Image (cartoon, rainbow, N blue to C red; front, side):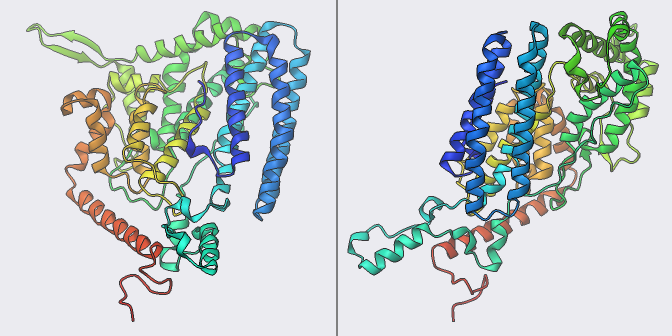
Length: 497
């Protein structure tokens, strides 16, 4: 899926941002060439990527040196690592003869580039954003318009004010408004290749790909208070139980597939680990595993029957009862999981895609959501203010980029991480999916379930109102300070002496 450049991705240095835009174009071009099987054109693109490294990295490092950036050496080390890995791919591609090998190498390249874009540019490079100098006018600080009437001395002062880095001039009682939003982002352990049989490797590769989706939803913000249990995908305990369910109930169906067993006899898995396993499979075998995965879950679905009077009833299979037992939380406060029915089984089925590793795409979408949230709902002093409704529109767009039910969980994840995504925001957001609750429940069932629980706890809305009032008061104090109505040494609420 092509990457679309957003202003939220910029760090504020025009040359560096232009470089990053060029990289986006190169990644998109690589995906296009691979999709169209234009493998003969790939060496020229690879050389452009090498040239990008040679031009961009020194330019970015020079900028960091000028900013006295403390983590410059670690950042430069990442540049070196990236350049080395890219050169290995370039050298490898030059030796390949068959189209199949070239296609596999292109897949590795694209995954590598997307990972760099998400984990380096959208994570490490954006850390530079607060340090890049911005003129005060760009930050919304009003300047005198009638400059011509000022004396030369006053004009010099105004120019100095315009270029002053106001983001470091806030008094102590407002200094927290300089801090970027921080939260905990868990990571998976390193890949493992210590498997004694092909079936163990295959099962581990399936579980790791699922875990990459689940661990994305495990991010948390200890500063945000949420009284209700977390949605099940956001719980590490659920992830452990889900692996057990896959091992006992679904993987045996996959292993019974004749094609999967045949593959195991000819597959050379020397040096293959549970992460790169999918890079070594042909598309038809990926599809075979995915079809068997779907079959395993379909066998667990409730079956519709009719009583003698014609009433419809859903029959629960013994294996489905076992699934419910396995996935039951150790305590209701750990996570919220509805009684497992066909909708939940479809959700579980969506967690594996043998052709697409969603990890990088999820993180890319999340970084954009985070930036837009800060710019619209909780902007730092040094950030551009986003228009009202920008976050809502972006989240609605995200619904179209991932498996259908994932958008529901992404919205709930925002509520868990972002302080100003209140239940009132959730209520308003769900109105985009229907005229009444029944219609909305068909599109965002888990958000609607959460809001139903909220209504039984009025204290939640009371707390949210108080937090919103506190935030509005802080913004008022900030406006007063920036406009000069409140001196730097005057605490909030104090009367001028």
